[in-house]
Amino acid sequence: MNIILLGPPGAGKGTQASRLVERRNMVQLSTGDMLRAEKNAGTPLGERIKAVMDAGELVPDEIVDTLIDKELAGLAPDRGVIFDGYPRTLVQAQSLDRLLAARGRTLDVVIELEVDEDALVDRISGRFSCAVCNTPYHDRYKMPVVPGVCDVCGATEFKRRADDNAEAVRTRMAEYRAKTAPILPHYEAQNIVRRVDGMAPMDEVSAAIEAILDQS
Ligand code: ADP
Ligand code: AMP
Image 1 (cartoon, protein in one colour):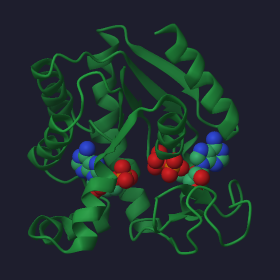
Image 2 (image 1 turned 60 degrees about the horizontal axis):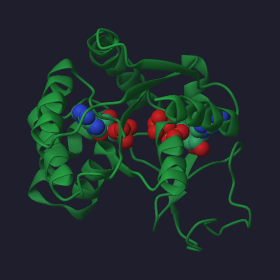
Image 3 (image 1 turned 90 degrees about the vertical axis):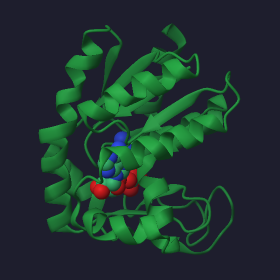
């Protein structure tokens, strides 16, 4: 299966994607994670995109399209993919159609996580993740079972994102509204959009997504 998780920053895309990776042996392709890896490694691409990312703006379409194409090239054709944070513009959605078709893949479902924007600031400001395996946590909603130790890999170092500050979050929300939400009609025309209440507790969101995938 090839699926897209769509929703504004903090909607729970990364959280749900990592659960699907565990449960369904799918691959999570997060352009945000790929771009942060470039930025943190200080590659020429990372240097180029650092300011744009830290401000919460979108990086150019051709950069993310190329990253996704490279990742798809390395995957076995029958391996399921979860697109997390991609596509974010109509141009990217059209590129993804082409990239998938070129590899004989089809998009099965687009899951829109519906959330209340006011709650997202609270979610984003409490977000942190494992510095080694990226498992997502939250100061109030999802602390590691053993304080200070990652549930998944046992690491003891955690990190917070440079763009999880009030100003960048405002810009990211505005970018979502202006450029990403408008791609929904592209998928509605294909009748593959399914909506999930992203405000429900994490386990309920996961159950709703599982039910949709079982039917798709
Ligand atoms: P996204 O990838 O869409 O930006 P994340 O998955 O990183 O969002 O979630 C943002 C923060 O909110 C994380 O700290 C995560 O632990 C928390 N979170 C995710 N889903 C829920 C939920 N259903 N209820 C409460 N908190 C959640
Ligand atoms: P995310 O981890 O998905 O919240 O993305 C973090 C940041 O990376 C965004 O605010 C953008 O600057 C950049 N980014 C991630 N994915 C994309 C994309 N598909 N298109 C453009 N910019 C992206």
